[in-house]
Length: 288
Image 1 (cartoon, helix red, strand yellow):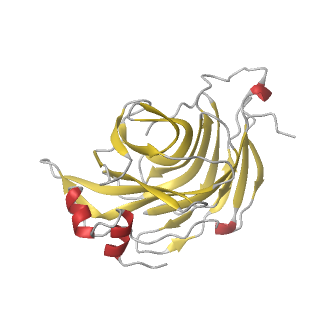
Image 2 (tube, one colour; image 1 turned 90 degrees about the vertical axis):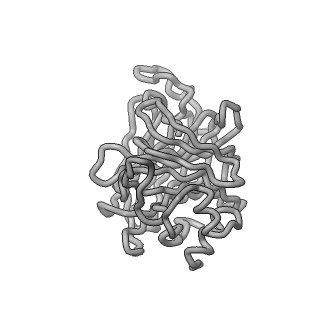
């Protein structure tokens, strides 16, 4: 469904007009989503010493909008599912995803959604949203927005990061930035949560990937009892990306990164463009 820029922004920010939403967030940019991406199928930094695995995708060298669906086929506690990306010509980037056993503003939750950018220079919470935004300092520094979010086995989720308006300047130093908006949707219930806006000096994204981790496990290196770790199964659908100018580009599966003892297994991986899927198993044993 195609929507005008003002209507898209009003929809995204709970019915407020585009002008009011931009004013409340202290922005001078004028457009909202550069385009509406179709669904692929129907900040806190994470520890990289735990039970985890990656999925990589081929993509154009620069894009301004990424949207991806994934289905959690088997749910596990203390687990984080995310879509990651780098900034073009930079050695850092960001991620958006959901997790079980979360934490929002110091309060434990059964689940939450997170949108984070490394080396962010500013961040804004969305009016009338349950999300909060703040800095983070674990495994690098940046800005992160998160909100309570229900994570349910068998549901399909969509995550979307998009360049918000045109590049602008902020602060007394007139720093040139691009604002990025993050949104998570439960495609099964059709409930969406806009997590916030985060500003970066980078103006485009590249190198999409997926990351799944059980963050409760401090270190699994050398473990002799891998089957004791909780099992999670996830179906990742190929991301959709839009390049500058509004053109959608096909994405294909590139590969995975299984690690010692973590039983990260790419069960199937296809290279059929935006219809491709990857089934990822992390942990074990496989339930009968």
